[in-house]
Image 1 (cartoon, helix red, strand yellow):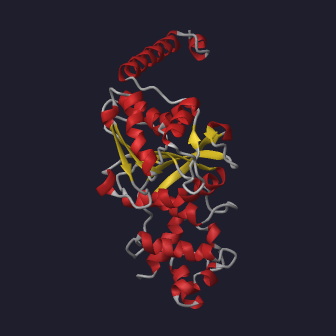
Image 2: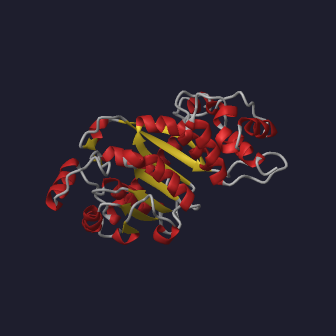
Image 3: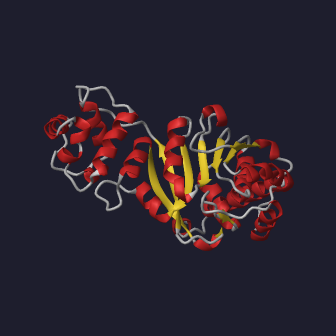
Amino acid sequence: MRDRARSGTGPNAQLGSSVRRIWARIRGVVSAVAGVRLLGARDIRDIAGRIGVRPTKKLGQNFVIEQGTVRQIAALAGVRPGDLILEVGPGIGSLTLALLDAAVGAGDARLVAVEIDPVLAAELPKTIADRAPESAGRVDVLTADALAVGEAEVGAPTVLAANLPYNVSVPVLLNLLAALPSLARGIVMVQAEVADRMCAGPGSRVYGAPSAKLAWYASARSAGTVPRTVFWPVPNVDSKLVQFTRHDPPAGASGAAAASREDVFAVIEAAFGQRRKTLRAALAGWAGSAPEAERLLRLAGVDPGARGESLTVAQFARVAAARSM
C-alpha cells in the first residue's frame, strides 16, 4: 500500500486526482456561466483594424495574441477572493479577459485597467461587454498614464498583472509600488534584459539601480520566458515574466531612524552613477566630500573600498540612515 501511494496509484493519489477533476469542472462551469470568451489572434487584428489602431513603438505596444500566454499570466497572478487587480496597458484586451476570468473564478475579485491610448481605452469596455457580458460590471477602465496614477484614480489594488510597455517598464513599476501601498504582489511581463536586472542580486553583472530600488519595495523572482511569436507585432527582443511580493522596507543603521525611500534612493543613484568607482569616491558628491563619505560608510558598517554593485538594499539603507546619526 505504501509503495502504491508513493508511485501515485494509491487511494490518496486517486482521491487527489478526483478532487482536481471536480475542481476543474467547477471552474469550467463558472467560466461558462460568466461567459468570458478570450480573444484570438484574428479577433485582435480585426478589432485593431476596425478602430484604426496600428501598434506603435512610442507607446511600447506589442499585443499578446496567444491565449495560452494570457491564461498563464492570469494563473501566476494568483487572484484571491476580494482582490482588486490592477492591469496596466490592457491594449485590445487579451490579458484583461483572462484576468476577468480569474476574478470570476476567485469569487468577488474585481479589475481596474489603466490605458494611456484614448482610442484603445474607449474600445475596451465594448470588447469586455461583447466577450463577457455577465461579468463586465467587474471591470473599470481608466484612460490615464500609469506613471501618474495613484489611489485617487485606481483605489487600493492588491495585485498587479500587466504586459508593461518595454520603454517605461521599470519607472511604471516603481511608481505604482510607491503610490499604491496596498499593492502586495504582482506578475509583470517585460523585456528579458529588464527582467534580469529586476531579479538580480548584489554581485551580479546586471545588478544596478533598478534592482536595488525594486528590492526596497519587494522581492522579485523570474517566472518564465515568453516567446516573441505570441506578440503582434513581433518584437525584436525576448520577454520574461517577473513575480514580486512586497515586504517591509529595510531598517536604518543601529541607533538611527530608518531612512526615507527618497534618501535611500539618493544613495543608490550616487553609487551606481559611477559604478566603477569605490563607494568612497562615488558617494563624495552625496556626502559633501570623500572623507565624509568614508566616515558615513564606516558608521554604517560598509567598506569604503567596496563598489555599489556589492551592496544589498539593506546596506544602502544603513548608509542613508547614518547621515542622521
